[in-house]
Length: 125
Image (cartoon, rainbow, N blue to C red; front, side, top):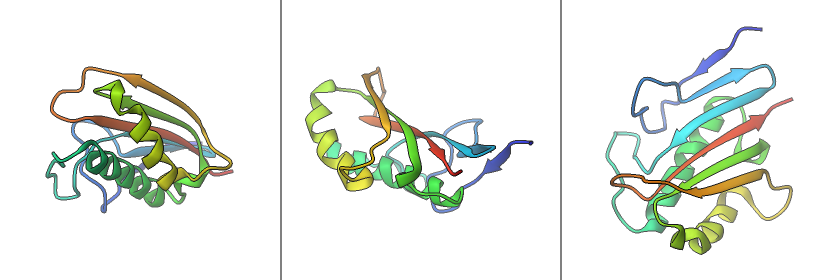
C-alpha cells in the first residue's frame, strides 16, 4: 500500500521540506508541531501558550488525517527547558486525557527561539 501525504490547512505550515503527516497502512506519522499559528506567526508567549499552540497544531493534523489524538500510540515531546516538565504534564492531559494514554518520551533539546515541539504516531485500525 503506498503512503498518503497529509496536508492540514488549519495547522501551521511546515517549517521545512516535510509533510504534516504521512499515512502508512493503519498508522499516521505526525511530524513535529511547533508553537506556530496557521498563518505562520510564531507564538512567543509563556510556555503554556506555546505548548497549547503546539498541541493544537498536532490535533489539527490528526484531524486532517482522519483521526484524533485519542488514537495516539506514541508521543514525543521535546523541551527547551526541562524545568517546564511539570507544567507540560498539566497541559498534556488537556489534549490526551488521563486514561488510555499513549506511550511518551520527553527529552530536553536545544530548541532555538521556542520552548516545545511535539510529534506523534496514531493507529487508525
